[in-house]
Amino acid sequence: MQLKINNVRISLRQEVSLEDALARKLDIWKTSIKTVQVIRKAIDARKKNEIFLNYHVIAEVDLKKDILKKVLTSNDVSEYIKKEAVPPEYGDSVLAARPVVLGAGPAGLLATLELARNGYKPILLERGKPVYDRLKDVETFWKKGVFNPESNVQFGAGGAGTFSDGKLTTRVNDPITNDILETFVKAGAPEEILAEHKPHVGTDKLRAMVTNILKDIEAHGGEVRYQSKVTDFILEGLQVKGVVINNDEKLMTDIVVVACGHSARDTYKVLHERNVGMEAKAFAIGLRVEHPQEVIDKAQYGEFAGHPKLGAADYALVYHNKDKSRTAYSFCMCPGGQVVASSSEEGGVVVNGMSMYHRDSGVANSALVVNVTPADFGDSPLAGIEFQRKYEKLAFEAGGSNYYAPAQNVKSFLDGEEPKLSEVDGDFEIPTYKPNVTLYDLSKVLPNYVVKTLRDGILSFDEKIKGFAGSQGILTGVETRTSAPLRIIRDRETFISVTHQGLYPCGEGAGYAGGIMSAALDGYHVARAIMKKYKPFN
Image (cartoon, rainbow, N blue to C red; front, side, top):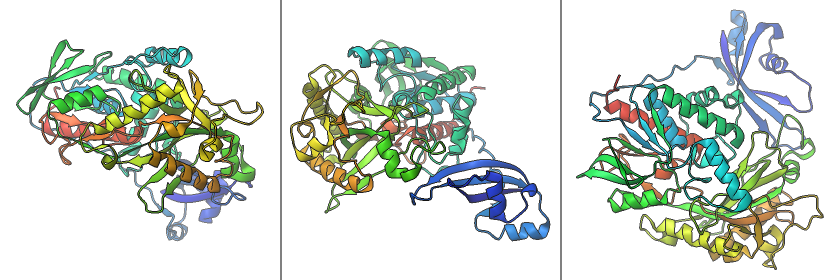
């Protein structure tokens, strides 16, 4: 019989195999265990002097009925029944033309892949370049400061996630999550993401994964077109009839999935001009902070810092001010990574973070951001974009108008002193941002209420991670692209725009996701909604 067993704990102080720990937990002979498959692995570091690895497993066991009955009385043990994938449901409506998907980020990729696998022959339009051509442009920007507004960290195959830590965690409790992870593994992601509590692939492995998903789309009858920016939408009343590509080519279709990503500001503008239903929404802005990874490892793991079974430590920090009106929090934490230049428009500096799969740079970085709402920037759907632009432009000018980022150490930011960088004598070479940084007072490139909340938040964070507020930490600015500043409103059941038939807002850029996994899940469900209404071509 197959059993699902939760909370099989192994202390790092012990030399115990998973099979031994499982036998001890179930109080059975080890020889009764035939196979063990790890389905979840997490680190329990609540007690720094006794850190545990915590496993959920599926085990094939050979037990007598009375022993099995006793084993099943535990709340951590149940019979394992594999859940079958949900089969697609096809509608009766006939497609007039091939469906079109805008954007090859996680949402667009999974929407296109699901449509292609089921015979809908979708066309994926990506304004940027293929992964490795895009990588060349990004590296040129980081090394020489030569910026390409159509091929950068935000635009190109894989979307913004291609230059990230490649985290695959999500707060969305969706039964299809494991199916999406298995799709990623088949495309080249490490198999361990199926079990890790906090799975990640790293930007290096993510590039190969994205490339293989795109190949899979084409192998199933889909078409992928690069450097194909949608510059207008063809409408017949309130029905979508097609798109205009690069201000020239018309591509006719009744189905357009808008998975444009949170930085496609020109696309937002066109949709607004076409009276597509949109609304302003809250997001967050702030700075990037980086510390020596060993500081974070020691704070999180104590004497076990550097243990080979733990890897680079991460953190998740939250601070609420006294009246609960503002929250400072860490976001997109990248262990063993680097801060990266992430501009998508000329004349603006944007910072983000990324890590390679092995997370071995020796530097931890994270966004430290504060919530902002339409009450801060206005109720117009595009007001949040102008708010972002204002502070990106200030950062650009503060850095020297050459895409250098303004920077200073954490202590000088807290004390309001003359900006300084690290005071460590050569043993911690930061900042990691390229092409370079300029010493600058970061309180001048953010709203006062954001600065105050960040300062109070950093002091609070230092109580949890000793050294967080010290001079070893470096801040660079500004981080403005935490999520979309607006939402393209859609029907909850059909996923169709509330104002325009045939238009399917999708993913993070449409305001319905917050990371790689949640965007991929949204893309999958949008594709299923289209399939539920229309017949496949085959």
